[in-house]
Amino acid sequence: MPTMTAAQKRAHAKAEYDAFLAACPSRILLDRISDKWVTLTVSALGGGGSPKPGGGYGDGPRPMRYSELSRRLAGVSQKMLTQTLRSLERDGLVTRTATPTVPVTVTYELTDLGLSLLQLVRGIKGWAETHMDDVLAHRAKHDAGASDQGPPEQ
View (cartoon, rainbow, N blue to C red):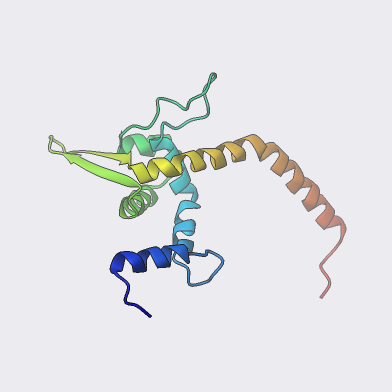
């Protein structure tokens, strides 16, 4: 077998990514991007809200300060937001910029890689918001049926 360069090895490994395999590193990434706080943080940095009439989302992607993100993401703890932002920065989805002011101004912004994820995140978030009533109705129907059947057989 001929010797492969580092670039060839990376290309070969990339071609073999299969999230159905237990050892595939893409599973770690899937775990990261399927987290609700990651989804909501990426969406907020992407301009954030629900689609506006005539198309478009909010003001579009823009840098945000930590405190602004914290206010936008109702219910997120300081620890969770910090962990989420650090993991997104580590994965190359967000950049952190510190401006030397008094006090220091820190902003977070989606990278090109983060922007490529934004459309998918918006789709999932929108689907969840659109179909929540349907899901709640199915849950209620299922739970009512399950209580009528008694305990499961063993």
